[in-house]
Image 1 (cartoon, rainbow, N blue to C red):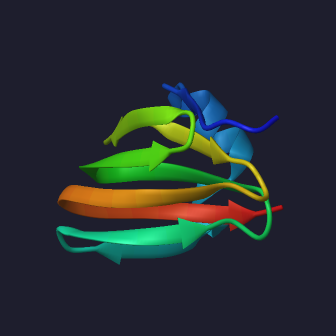
Image 2: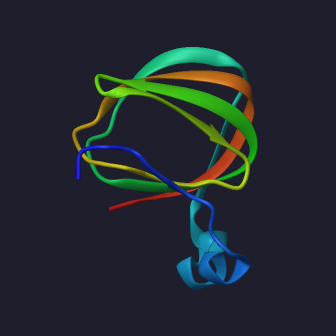
Image 3: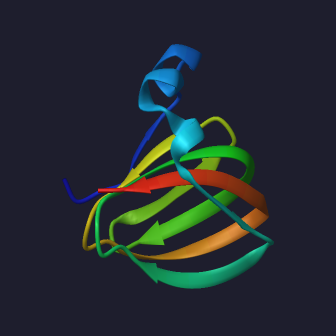
Length: 89
């Protein structure tokens, strides 16, 4: 899989994934380049970002469960302060 996958999970799915045990991360509005050295799954509690890849651009917002594949290079444009949790692998 070489693209970003976005889902809107149910509360039950989030509980099953044990997101309360994931690492927190937040960022103020900014733009930066990023490369994923490993697969990452993230859940966004608040905020909005645009992530641009060689294949296009996606918007990620509060309530989204997002999968970023290993090897992905992209540019993050944080439009509204983001507050998320993530797990690698």
